[in-house]
Length: 276
Image (cartoon, rainbow, N blue to C red; front, top):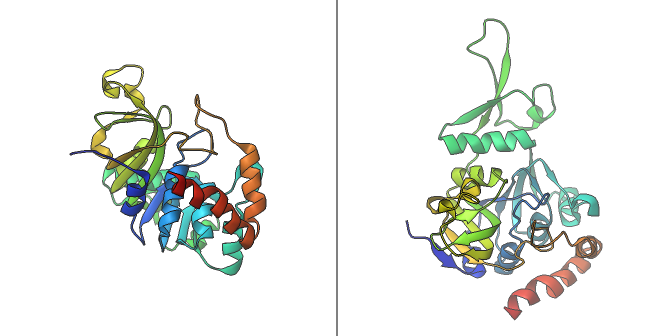
């Protein structure tokens, strides 16, 4: 497989309308591809089904704010300590998007089913919750290996059309290093295509280096790579930059109204892409 070293705009063009798009969470520097999402906002996609692995935040809020999202599937949508995701909150009030409520273990379990090539993943943790009333695609059965009544939930395999995240390092072979964030490896295994923006280029093969090999996704799972310095900003990327709390608070304040959100796009999304 030939790995494409492409641009952020190429990644945006590759994410088709109606795609199931999986995004990394915005805590602990897990690999948010915010620069790539800005490029996607400039493309103005439609009818996306966003999947949070397992939660969503600023990346999703930007796409929801431009009416690019038809459906959201995740455990939460939030800007963390900086507040609620304002465009998401507004879309919920107006009924502009459909919500598929889930949990962190359920998202990970359903992705693992796709990773393993099986049609479902059994899970107990949601038994007795209201989630089952709202997820007609989740099925409760009796455990066939147990003598007495022993219900268990079957989650259908979750297979994103596209996975999108940011990596600290990529090498000339197209391998990408994700460190301890192994959920991104599961995501790449489970998805039809995986696009990665990366912070720095690694001179050498990451898989040949004991320091990096265990946390490296092999190129066979990567569809395309794009260089993006500060590609996760304003979200943190450990050992590179910290979370820009001031900017995220500014986003929250501006995006709390439709007019303010449009002003934010002009100042921090559309102009940033044009300058490049």
